[in-house]
Image (tube, rainbow, N blue to C red):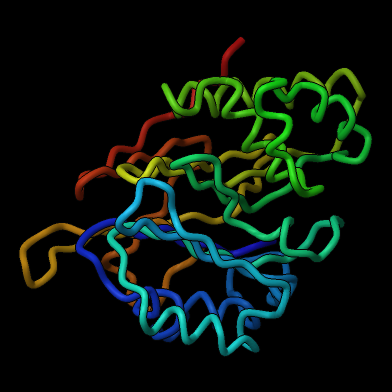
Length: 262
């Protein structure tokens, strides 16, 4: 399983979250504590919002702990909202187009989890992508297909409803193919203003997801949503309940139950 984090708040250097903490995202790439596998070495990616509506993107296939370019970028780039992801492939090829985050116009998306029986469902899921979005499919992951399906279900207009419809669509296909393996998802999407994070599984074992918010020196509230805490302090990390949608915007966090569409 992959590890990821999403930050929103006062502009900070990316390295303050991705490289510096004791359990930084780079550390999680070789020693994750709450993942199925401690090693997440099948590539990495960062996406950040700067002066333009379209976010910047840097992805590569090296292990995050072994790429000086990642460190060089993280020690110089400052952003008010950014994503970071380290990948553990669930079967798709290790190449840049399969590394997260994925980008569409002003949106970023990243994912941790797996669609059960994906190889059996891949054709049906791919054909379900709306024609106007199909040309944006570059890789072979279930994650990117999930993103494009969510866009087709209205992610840009109503992220919570789009996530619900996408999960319901996938579960329906899984049932029609008699797939017993579970659907497990934690995902984050952003339009450059808000972060929308999802935690769900069709069994009782959803991937881990936490959040924390704090006021900085300028009294502006910052929030981070992530696969696992960056340190051993327990009083400020809040676990996101299973089957939940988290929305954070301008320092405010709302967690609501994920009610699947019929």
